[in-house]
Image 1: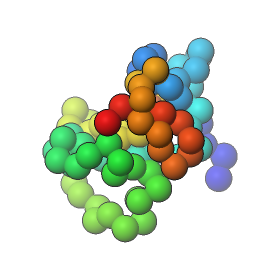
Image 2: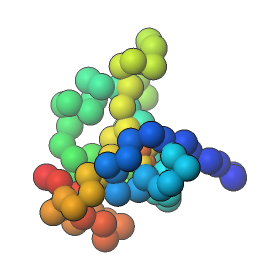
Image 3: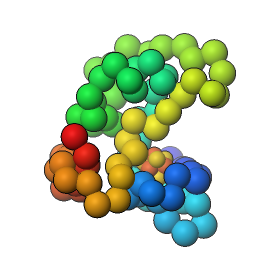
Image 4: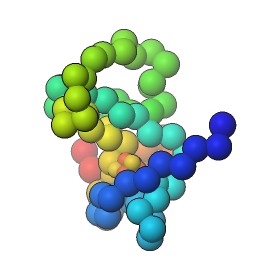
Length: 82
Ligand code: SF4
């Protein structure tokens, strides 16, 4: 699958000029899910998660956001804030 993910969150490690996401995979979830589960709950666990309904786009978030300069190491070797 040839996907292009566009994103305007410029302080994310995966963001690139032209508003492109360069992550190999991301996890999009409901805001409720994002607030409930820790940073470690991310795309690598997606197959195990139960799908949810969001209702509209204002209640979704990217769970793979990783602030530039953060200090927690993830499975792909990139550092993420704890
Ligand atoms: S990981 Fe999420 S927040 Fe970061 S650039 Fe990609 S889509 Fe945007």
